[in-house]
Length: 379
Image (cartoon, rainbow, N blue to C red; front, side, top):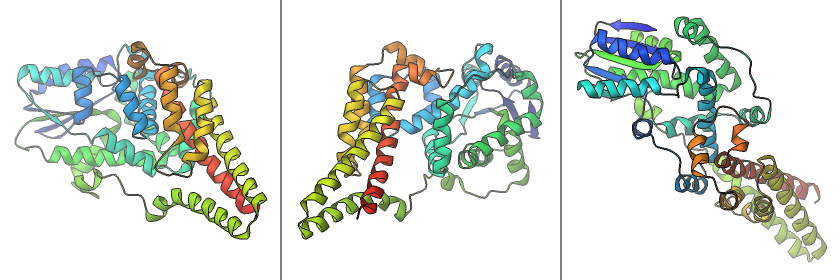
């Protein structure tokens, strides 16, 4: 799908998993003879594609320590959706972008990376997703991911109304993520294109789903946000930052209250409620992730302690134990970035480590709130 904005700017809409898109890239570069090939890649994704970078054990451990398990899972889920469509095409997401880069470099054509950093995009999407949207993602992973619907990629690339329907479905599923992944990136990509020297012939290779949005921004030359605004991860509100500290303050406040009253029975009850609620729900989260029994025990033991310290998380410890006792092989780590279905996240050892980390943290968080509610109700 080709859109000419002006004589010096052509947009080529592609499906990131289509063999036809790879051929279209070759054809358009040969026919249009651009001086700049702009691709829908950021620096980190460019480096990953060019160097064929794969996840390794050190990287997996870093993800656990930095609390990025939900972001990596979200990125993998989005890639899995694309991969499911392109399974019969024999292509991996980004094949046509890599082809555009390789051809441009071979011909000495300038390459421009015009996409927003993937980590910024994912963090903004995660921050803008409501709690119920995050739960919907989890439940979608737990449900049946078999889809017998056949998608005609040729038809997909030729008809914008089909693409619009797909984009709208994402926005309906998660309005917050849809805004970041679609609307914001349309605006960001358009602004990056406008910053390239307009006297040069530019061929922009972008996902076909972004064509309409980018075209509208380029034609209207209207920008709601600056590139710098779209590149910043929104700061959490003071209330959001203080919430993790409210539960420890509540628990220690009740403890001080009972000590002041000299009521030892209430102190025992307090710790019993706190320990059981945290341990049970964190363990359930780990069990749902199909964690090793030692990971489940670690989750149960760590949660009552880590819930009192917002700088720690039970999932970090459970995920680390899972990484050690059910260590992913080199093949697991390689295949994780190529998973084709939601169920594969549980069967792949690398995916299971991330699930153990994320779902244990979720269970621990719920346990802390349930315990706090129980303590307040028991006063």
